[in-house]
Image (cartoon, rainbow, N blue to C red; front, top):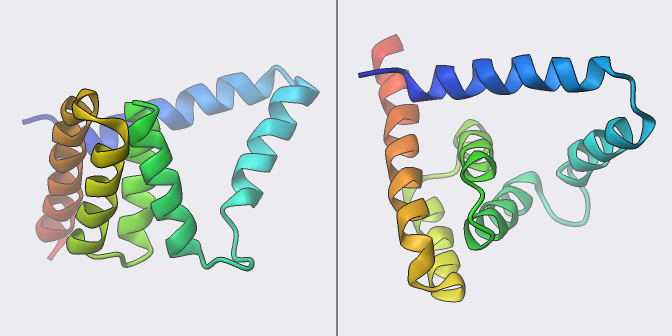
Length: 119
């Protein structure tokens, strides 16, 4: 099976570098705003990641879901916490979110498997 986590991160990194190398002020500011929006503030990082995950699932952005899943995983959120957030996303977004829910489960399993292989 291909390593979907590494493939996603490699592609994302390569394309972000390419996009940012064009030195477009608007794009750079949007990237900066996105990064800073998820920093610790009145809400902690874990809460912000769950909010980002729910919004991404409802908007049906698989790349965004993967990004927030990985960050949530790295921040120490449990599968139960993530699944509960995804259940809210599915409730709000409706059944059209189910295919994205499937891919989210697959990606979370890959995150866990990646750590298992390092042990």
